[in-house]
Amino acid sequence: MKLENLQIKGQRILMRVDFNVPLDSSNAVTDDTRISETLPTIRFLLENGGRLILMSHLGRPEKKLKEDGSLDREKFTMHHTIAALSKLLGQDVKFVDDTIGLKVETAVNNLKDGEVLMLENTRFYKEETKGDEAFAKSLASLADIYVNDAFGAAHREHASTATVAKFFPAEKKAFGFLMRLELESSSKLLNNPQKPYVAILGGAKVSDKILLLEKLVDIVDTLIIGGGMAYTLLKAKGAKIGNSLVEEDKLDVAKDFLAKAAAKGVAVLLPDDSIVADKFDNAANTQLLSSFEIPDGWMGLDIGPKATAIFRAAILSAKSILWNGPMGVFEMSSFSKGTQAIAEAVAEATANGAFSLVGGGDSVAALHKSGKADEVSHVSTGGGATLEYLQGNILPGVVAIES
Ligand code: AMP
Image 1 (cartoon, protein in one colour):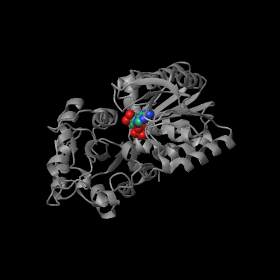
Image 2 (cartoon, rainbow, N blue to C red; image 1 turned 120 degrees about the horizontal axis):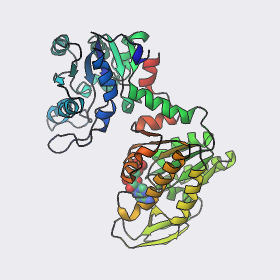
Image 3 (cartoon, helix red, strand yellow; image 1 turned 180 degrees about the vertical axis):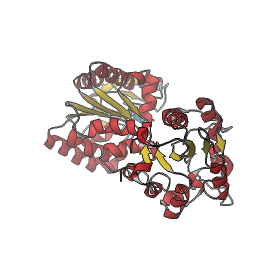
Image 4 (cartoon, helix red, strand yellow; image 1 turned 180 degrees about the horizontal axis):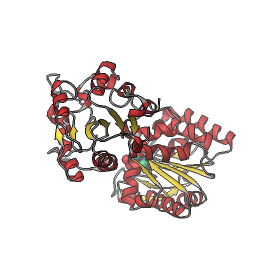
């Protein structure tokens, strides 16, 4: 069911959000992007008289137990997010320090139309990550309607992201606006993307991106590969890469991938030149060299001007663009130029009519740093979920609403 078609007034709405936000040492939220992105859905439900029950996970409490083996409730409580949400929303947010059970039921029964209650961290129950039916049923019993706006957690088959939806009929469950926008944007690149389709991949490791590469090679016209991962591919082509980042155990995978791309007629653009450094340091000595002739003791930390120009031309020819992963160590100013230039090229192509999606943790950070985040078609904050969706994988959180 579409969110706009739900009967909301006076209804108890259980909404899964992704408030897995970074906190500082005093447990204040340092980046509220994930909270602010879901505000349109929260506001819509409250303005239409819903009684809103929010649930989320925060961190990995099940993996970071205290020395005595108990949960670190003080560190991982959802209470840390209440102040940021109340401020953004401009209204009080109630909190209950449990996720299911009598205390929670009482708090829900006390909710009035237009009020919002935050439940405790879903991962305080080990049943959450197991997708446990009984736990999900207890969650479902709290509400009349289920809404999922946690795209960042949609690739997990957990109780609050997937199993819970089973207990609501189709006309009582919906995607939130954020989740819908993420799905619509990603599917523009999955289903009949406008051609030419150019994908830009960067970041540290081939091993993290190989599944995406294997999928993309079936649908894109050009693959641009920069960042640390490029050096494993360059080495697979016989380049001398000095001390650049390399995954020796992925050289065969890289060779197979390059052969597959060639057989399919997909152009794989690797950086012809690199800014190389004598240490992994912003203040390192640097020189500009061919990426095929990097001496020992030197490592490629950014793409060079020739590579930048070739990548830029390919990007400007595209009608569809996916960008995941920086072109170099963008966190250090000495090695951020390549990533900056790619951000500018993607923005320019978008202004010329291309559809562009930037997704995956570090590329989003790099895009924000470049000041071009408002000039691309869609910035996906889904991280792992975005990449899995673009690989053509079924997301349990999505299927659960659709079925
Ligand atoms: P990922 O999370 O896989 O997208 O990787 C992002 C990280 O890759 C960033 O922290 C970058 O600093 C790092 N990175 C990018 N290019 C290189 C490179 N040439 N050598 C080492 N690390 C790199």
